[in-house]
Length: 119
Image (cartoon, rainbow, N blue to C red):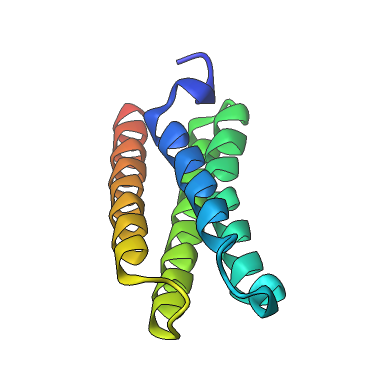
């Protein structure tokens, strides 16, 4: 694989970040520096760490950055739960984002396993 842009997990993480921006754009303005900012940063970090790790050209570094990406994903999921529980994220959007997040988590774990088997 020549480019991180070819990775389905990266493409899916980009899609999640875009959906996150659209969703948080509907949040109350008083959340701009709270959950809105935190969710956007975590969502963007998922794809960014996949790209950065791929660019390191070392399997060990790539795995390390994939694990950081996993951490950002879990952070994002935590923000989703909070946003839903405080009533600013409707159940339908919450379920959509959680499902998408779960799929990305599975892809990251599978990629880590595949990379570790090769090394």
